[in-house]
Amino acid sequence: MSSLNLDLLKQFLESQYSRNLVFKTENIEIVLMCWLPGQKTVVHDHGNSDAITFVLDGEMSCITHYPDGSQEASVLKKGEMELIPVGIKHEVKNNSTSNITTLHIYSPPLSTENASQSLGYNNDTQTQTINLNDQTLNYLVGCIPEDLIKLLGSKEKQRKTVTIIGGGFSGTLVATQFMKQHLGNEELQIILIERAPRFARGFAYSTNSPKHFLNVPAGKMSAFVEDSNHFLDWVQKRNPTISPSSFVPRMLYGEYLENVLFQADQSKASNIKFKRINDEALNISIDQKEKKATVYLESGINIKTDHVILAVGNYPPKNPYVKESSFYNSDKYSRDPWSSKTTLGIETTDSILLIGTGLTMIDKAVELNHKKHSGKIYALSRHGLIPKTHDLNSGLINPDIEKILLKKDLKSMMKSIREEINKVLIDGQDWRAYIDGLRPHIQNLWQSLDQKNKKQFFRHLRPYWDTHRHRIPDQAAIIIETMINCKQLEIIAGKVIEFKEQKNSVEVLFKRRGLDQIESLTVSKVINCTGSEQDFCQIQDPLIINLLEQGLIKPDALSLGLEADKQGALLDSSNQISEILYTLGPTLKGQLWETTAVPEIRVQAENLAKKILTKIITITNKASI
Image (cartoon, rainbow, N blue to C red; front, top):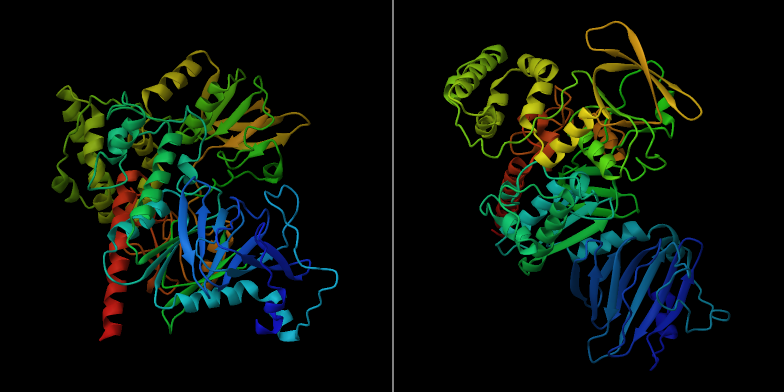
């Protein structure tokens, strides 16, 4: 960068820090800033521009403000850089007693619209001429993101890096576990990438509806295995009336997860660096020789890393099969029930079809009820089953697992389980107590079955299991029961045959279960509530598509997720276990079945962090011998 002759542009002003234009095109803007002691910016973002701060002389104090309200303070020394992506705010200050010069790179150039501070230049931009050779010009215009990361990598070359793709529940917990568990002397960097504006909340806890309740009581929702009352203690500080058996709004649990991540960041060891990046991962390449990966982000940033964890969570549901699928492009159809656009334009008197009758349908129906919706709501699924209600007084009954495991096929297992449930009922106890007692053993039971039996369960028994296992709180059950009794909500067992879109409505042709007669109903909106897509061959995510094309990952045999070992190490298309790529949560459904709820994922997050940290420490120790 010496060819820029930056010294010619240096000027320090008593009134405020100076902004001196170095170079500007349609794609990039470079500004030299000069700071006297005590000079600072206000808290600001950079609009639609990514920004890079490079310290040329001195030490600059920085505070990064994240969308979830948390902050991270740092000091950039001479030769160090910081990336501020779109959506992140920060403030900088010269807290030293010396003058500071910094170079700031913006792509695209900053916009003066809605700027929180002056964006003028203190140098004469009309007469200032800077001669740039071709090599420097090409560097500035075309290569900054890639080359910058290389420079950052050289600064961090002694720091092992773990990159987590997905900043929802799974990603938040595993990032937290890395910061809690790493007690060694090794320098460690944790990078958490999330494409949504807010970290920690993810698919499940990003709702803003106060009527979307957790399906598990507060006393069982701790983020940590070793501290079962962690969430309860946190939420009772806000509302002392909440008890272990209370079902609280999911938006409140989202705030809790944000706090968990913030506290882990604040209390982490000094040799751990934690970065959050609001961006989308598009691809990953593996250098088998160096045993490293490169993560490619939509912004153009490339991250060199030692390990990558896919914490991708849930994807929007697949479209139900119909011969003519053009309707799925209509604004009268919503594939993603959690999109902010799902209920836009719906009048309170409109008729609506919810495809699916599980937990997502319950949430949408409750949400519409909360919005005073009075129109007819149809909910249609193959079996027409809706989730059962919790009974917090049912207790817990431990099943005879050894007896069940002796059965080698699904039919015998289910017969044994039904016999035990019948005994429970004869004794005057609740079937829920038995199901809850069975839950910790589900993974072992699932893994004892062969592929044929697993397919049978998935095809024939899953709807019945889901409605008994994934239950709803009384608050939601009462609303749903009232809506059904007053005939506002109609549950239909059947399947959609065809959609016929009209100017202001949709005619839906369907068959009821067990009947050949085609019936129709007319609605204003169709919302897909069938549950997340699990077949990774059908998922239209650039990252997943690219990983599949490279053979770095493979779908499991049941199309329920990805093939991996029991500890979350992903298998490639040749069935080789990766030493770099890992996953946890819903992607492991084919291996574990029970892997989508808090109790299971918090254990996976803790164990995965331990596994990778052990690998890092082992490699570091070998390298030092």
